[in-house]
Length: 310
Image (cartoon, rainbow, N blue to C red; front, side, top):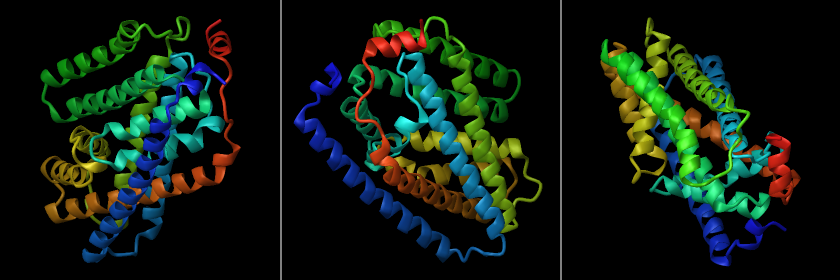
């Protein structure tokens, strides 16, 4: 048993499980509310093939997101893989549906400490790097699409520079050990997050095709709308998982910048939430099935460091 596992307090464990239960309840409430909204709007079912494609794209995006987080943790010298993190990554993040944004990251930190022996400080740094990189990538895309020259390039360059510099600065400020030879994990993570937003934009395009709306809307506009709309929901900390805020922002961006009719934009935004929730439900169901296969402990920290950064 590692030092991190020994320091897990009983109250942290109880809070962890309480957060998972409450997060699951809020998740179910979101699913019911979103489905009811779609039914109220009488969504046509003629484009079910496109909607299935949108679901597949969102699921793929979630897998890319997990891969990007693994790059972040490997930068912090944690030898994690899809096999030993898939179940815990999704199940421990259920508390994110509690208003306040941080609860999901606290749940993940508790899981990493209890199951994989990774200390709270290191997991917290990883969460900061992940969230910051996610937001930075979204804002960079938004700056390139929605701002006018020369401000778009200046804002994008500033965001990119700040995002790259933030990794070593945060690690140095927290005295965290990081990989000195695998510096390319930083740009690789940003590329992964950019791919995530591209997949989200493609999913929106599939939804538009399934509904028969938004003909001629540029894919770049859809990618930017997905990224900036998510950022608005994420940064609204008192709303669980940005529910409502993301949809309002997404609908506004689609109608104001993409030329989509407001009613169509609202419909796309609501249906995209339903598909995202169904995708998350699939990931959670898979995680429940695989949870017993995950290892109960991680190798000692020394072996983690030596195996990644010799």
